[in-house]
Length: 224
Image (cartoon, rainbow, N blue to C red; front, top):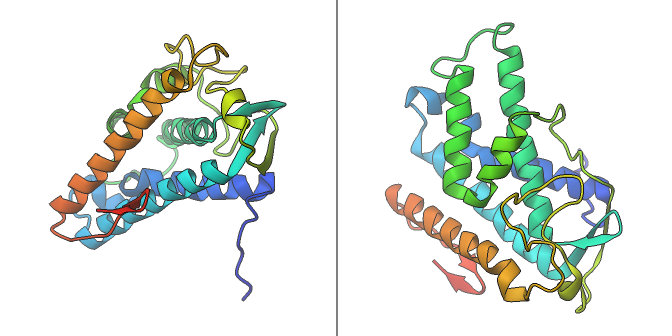
């Protein structure tokens, strides 16, 4: 059997990685035992580990590559975040659409999944809550990337000065007025992102501690 390793320099390979990563991010929410209180600690640990490694990959990718959305250099974290919020919204819509036509999942009616997704985004990606609320009024019909065409190239030093945080065809951060303002400083436009990355790290560290297991987590050459 030939192993498939996506080529992240191609749009198809990059979108494959985001698709798998979005599954890792949702983690326990895709496990039936979670809704009946029977999720095994080892399974929960695997879910957390998958999410953590996907976030490590995002940091590595954004350090070495630049994404053009259309012709606009766009923050890699924004592309990952847009993919995630579209994915969870589409999953939620699919659950509601199929609610009456498929056998029910014990403990997981559509409203329960909706609440779990909102809790997940609120705790792990708080900056996306406004976007999710807007998207829930007109959810996407596809689980994959539905945004503008992407181009991926090796990162250049000047890219940091040109990148925008948001998109022309949708607002990922509706309340962040200066997200795409070229006059905004690097510190101003990235402060919320750095703060959220730190919060996500602390959240994962607490979850590992709750499991009673010691795991090595590496961020900027520091191990936790």
